[in-house]
Image (tube, rainbow, N blue to C red; front, side, top):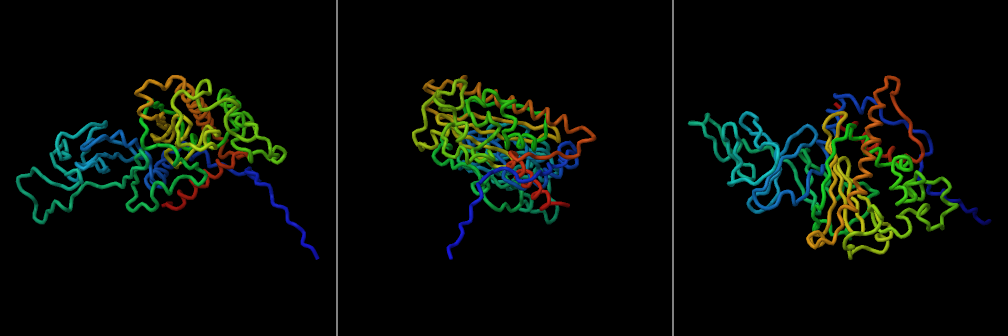
Length: 392
């Protein structure tokens, strides 16, 4: 008796049932914000700056992660260190907000002059005498785990971080190994304070239902976005166009376009190490929750990082990265490239702020997700899992 073949379900990405969003209170409540900082931002690898922002021995800068203020510095050998920006004497701030280069080989508290080595060891206490049993070795700076990954700096406030940075990118992230990421320099930096919760930005990032309305220019450049979809298999009827290579079905940039720019053309040297598929795609995303994503284009890269300021305020920093020789030669048309990316970010920020304001309705306790918002649902589950893991 011959066996009856079992049909394989079409790999449709969409949700099969309506799923609830996170509660509206999770985006506005100050107490919940602090719980998220502790459970998520203080226990995961967080992108804080570029390696080049700390250039050479004794370079330092302050950063804020969640509610915690840190100081990053390079020791005499150039090795990167991170500490809580707190003196072990009475808790004074060690370094004022900003960046610079230490004049000597000590970190000196501006209050009572307790002095620490660049490895965080307490070296000098100016008191005329020391209490019985006082040992300098017992009072080092509070060290924080820090890693450099391909030109990006990450910190982790957990006492014993598990996985390393490279192992904690989102599973759906593109492989960016063909981009010379660690050799790139910042050609333009854009900073914006968004009046919205940090999660709203990620929700907007993880769906394209808003693209036809909010991003007409981007939808023209990436035609599948103009259909409110992110990928071929987001369409429940994708099989009907399974062999169609037109970008509105297959993804990628419009015919003739090369990169994200105002006119769709590359405006600098194209990276020679990219595969044909990477060149055709025109955009390759890698996401590292909760703080950053990076995108590879054929002629430059973009990174975007987030810093929560409060329940309804988030700092966004975007950087456009290029080969040093391309910038120094003047062969890069920065305005054409940056203008387009900034437009998209401004549009995203504007609609995120609209979303935030609407959540204040006392009737709206929770929303509902549509099938195309499957990645948004995945993000919500990522948040839920981390909050549950560290519930008090």
